[in-house]
Length: 158
Image (cartoon, rainbow, N blue to C red; front, side, top):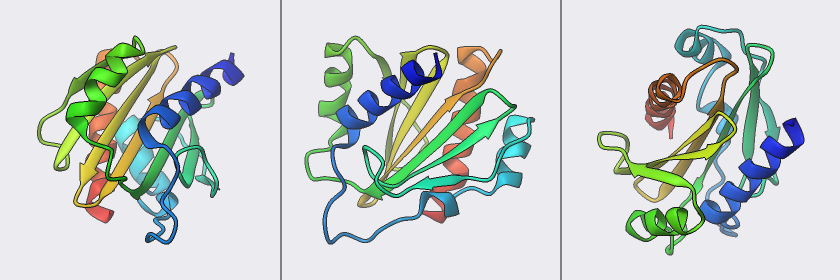
């Protein structure tokens, strides 16, 4: 089950992020949220972030939350072809429920890839931030609120 969830996450990262730009400023996603901030927002324990510098969409920081949940953060320069107005129909074409979110970054898209997972893509200036959350026992509505709070905290440091 965990491998399937990770495979879905990698697929979504690939659809939305592509490969990190070469020569662009590198962003360490593990510096965008502290373990304490994550615990305060989620109301559950969290592990220290583990950096995968070669994640599918760029450097990825992953946390285990509440023993079974997963929080992943990707932050990198946006590609010229990453345009929210073009990305929304692409998600729908791939049968991924997606909606625009107002008040988060310059533009933001919330997706629901299934398996109890929500993903928020936020654009700020020339950067893109993806925060993906899956919490055991949490409803989609609760995860939407939590991922939005985490993304807003991370955007301040981006």
